Length: 268
Image 1 (cartoon, rainbow, N blue to C red):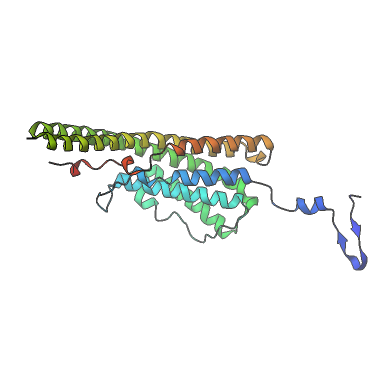
Image 2 (cartoon, rainbow, N blue to C red):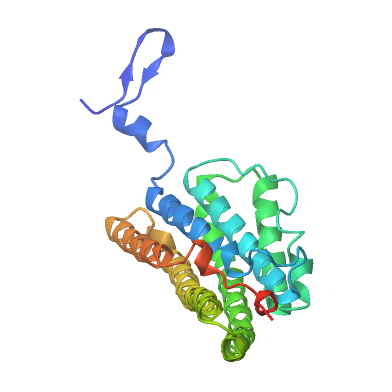
């Protein structure tokens, strides 16, 4: 019943199970996790502010470049997991490393390593069969890149705290100098708006750090289970990591109040 059937003129009919076995393994959990992680990694609100100058400060620009690099790699990982073809002929991260080098040499080095890996996979027409090797080779630079991002974000926090305190002090002075109650009420409303912005921005810093930690943990899980990616237990663990990452991403402030107005914009 399950054997090979021979038809006339040399044609051979293979059992259905044999035909199914020729397809690529089901890496759907990896694909879904990579998609969620790639979207969560790309969080420009962390380092951009409405009304700020077009040219961001170097540290903020470096963080944005690292976000773009990490997201690009994760999107490529999702493509491989879906047995898609990477349409890459050159290093897709080449433009990001120079933007990071001055702020984080380790981050720039990790980006260069990931970029070279993606270039090689693209030129070799990699698909699902190369997924496991890609995860193994990419884990070290992914972990290094995320660590560099976390360090760079932490380095921004003192300036954020200083700006918040300066804004509070300025509004306190303006309230003392105000000549009538309507003016004081306007100042109180503006001060509350700024304070809410700073509070949400602090939450963004903290919650994005959690997102990055979850991405690092999730990729480490892929490497740990790389020889068993199609097993049910592995799929369960990856789904759980995806759910945890979704919860962390949902806590990221994305409304206008999530970005504090620069202290220079406060009334004088």
